Image (cartoon, rainbow, N blue to C red):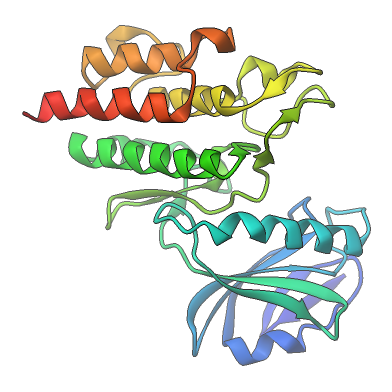
Length: 279
């Protein structure tokens, strides 16, 4: 069925009360096709522009229980307590709709997804046209973010370019969601995990394998190749230095033991190499 939020129509299995959303401003857009059980709203009002995630309804592409989606969102917001410039700032969260749902309010991140709808490579192409220093800063920000998350016990999960937000005006690349990140130690008990094949490490397909910092090292290595090179890893398509190519190549070794052993190790060698090249 169709419902509307502040005049913006969206699809839903059954009508849900959104009157609790009105004090936060005007709804500008609704994302109703998520499989997580969340509805997502872009709202502009007295607290500025925000992204609001709400669990407690029955979205069209979600067949599970609303209570389970709300529990997952309550757990997910804990990851945003560790603030970093490369993820949205969590402004507040709590029970809404008389306790029938849970909502999280984030400061809005300007920019465009690297996997827009309908699918297109145009944003990736625009990103790669940025000057080298901007691209290096983007990569450094995301390595630094994952170092911080690893220090608090989290490995990347559901890493995909739909969650990567590129802002060509500010020259930034940020993650709009880390909800699917995994608390270590984590064992792959399902086989193929959630995520984009562009970035996924071999162990993310292998039941019984450990998902840890070395998995995130792989994800970031593939990100580096998509920013500076090509997915086939050929050196002739790499647009940064040979030293950075070798660092990225070690990230994407098939055997986790052959990769950089930690995100801190990756950050140290990457920054040292960039520093030498800036002299």
